[in-house]
Image 1 (tube, rainbow, N blue to C red):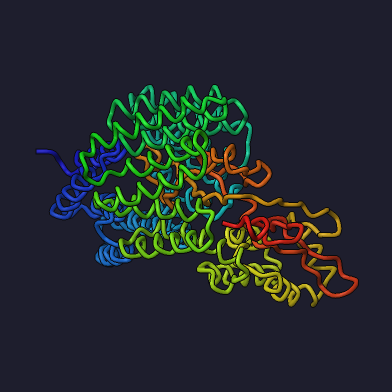
Image 2 (cartoon, rainbow, N blue to C red):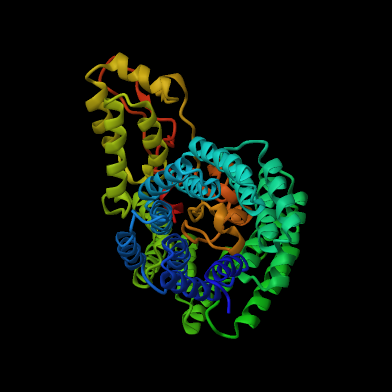
Length: 561
C-alpha cells in the first residue's frame, strides 16, 4: 500500500500528465493518510493539491474550497514540531485558491508571507515553490519586474535545495517572466528548463516547455522554429493522451503554420487532432475537446472565412451542450461573443457564457468573459453597465491614493494592475481622481509621475488605433506552473491571434505577449484622452492608457463586435 508521501508525488505526476481526476483522487487519499498520522505539514501540502483539483474539475466552487482551506488552517497546532511549516504550507493552499479565483492581491500576500516564513526557517525547497506562486500572482497583476525578481529568487532557492525538478520549474518561471517582459533571453532560460526535464525524463513538462519555446520563437518572428517546437510538444502530448496539453500545442502548431502561409496544413492538422480527442472522449466531457475546437476555428477562419467559422462555432455549442461539457460550452459561447458581426448576438452570447460560468463556478472563464462584456458595453457607450467597472474604479482609487502619498512602489504596483481595467473607465473618472491630487501641488506630483515612468501628454503624440472588423478575445496568462497539464489559473479562453489574416486585425492593435505568448488586444480599450489638470498645467497621460484618435478604441461603430 502506498504511503501518504508516495500518493502525494503520484498526484503531482498525474496532474502533469493531464489526468486531473486521478490526480485529485490520489491527493484526497494522501490528505486522509496524513491526517491519520497527525502530520500537519503533509496534510497542508496535500490540501493544496485537493483544493486546486476540486476547483479545476468544478467539483466545488472556489468559495467553498476557500472556506475548507480556512477551516483546516484554523486547526493547525503551531506549537507542534511541524506547526510553523504547516502554517506556511496552508498559506500556499490559500494562495492557490486565490489565484484560481483571480484574487491576485490575496494570492500575492499569502504566497509572499509563506515564502518569507519558509526562508526564515531555511526550507529552500518549499521557499522556491512559494516564490513561484508569487511569480504567478505578479504576472496576474501585470507586474513583470517583480515577477522577474521572484522568479530569480525562486531559482536561487531551488539551486540551493538541489532539487532538479524544482529547478526546472524555476527556470520555466524565469523564462515566462522574461518572455512577458519582452526580454531577449527568454529562450535561453526555457532551454535550461528543457534540459533539466529531459534529464529527469519528465515528458509532460518537456512538452510544456516546448510550447513556451514555440511562443517565444513566434514572438521573435521565427515561425518555422516555433512550428518545430510545437510539433514536438504535440507529439509528446498525443503519445501520453494528455489532451488538454495536446490542444495547447495544437494552438501553437496552427498559429505557426498560418504564419508560414500553410493554411490548408493548419486546418488538416487541427481536424485530425480534434477527431482523435473526440474519439477518445467517446461522447463524454473532455477538457481537451473545446480547446482543440478553438484552435480549429482559427484555422477554419483562415481557410474558409468568418461566416463559415460562425456556423461552425454554433454547431460546436450545441455539440458540447449535448455531451454535458458545460465548461466547453462556456468557452464556445464566449468565442461566439467575440466573433459575431451582429452586436446584439455578440452581447447575448457573452452574457449567456457568463451566466453559465457563474452557475458551474468557473471563476477563471468568468473573469475573461466579464472583460469581453465590458468591451462590448464600452463600444456602445454604456460603460456604466460594464461588469468590470466597480473593480476599475477601485483600482483607480488605489492609484490616486498612492500618488497622493508619493509611495513609489505602491504607485507602480497600482499602475500596472490598473492596466487590465482601463477599458471600464471614462475620461472624467481619470480626470476627477487624478486632478484632485495633482491640483494640490502640480510641480511635485507631475515630477513624481515622470520619475515613475509616466508620460506627460504634451511630450508625446497620441497613437492612433484604427478600426477592426472583429474583436479578439482577451487572453489570459498561462501560468507556468500549470502548463504541463494544460491548466491555467487565468481565464480559459480561446486564441484569436491567427484570425488576423481573415478578420483584418492589425499587429499594432495587439498588446504585449503575455506568459506563454498569450495576448491582450491594445485596441480593446476605452477611448481615454490625455488628462488635463486645469489651464497652464501639462496634460497627464499614464503610459498604459490607450489613447485613440476619436471613437471608442474598438473601431468605428459599425465594426464594433
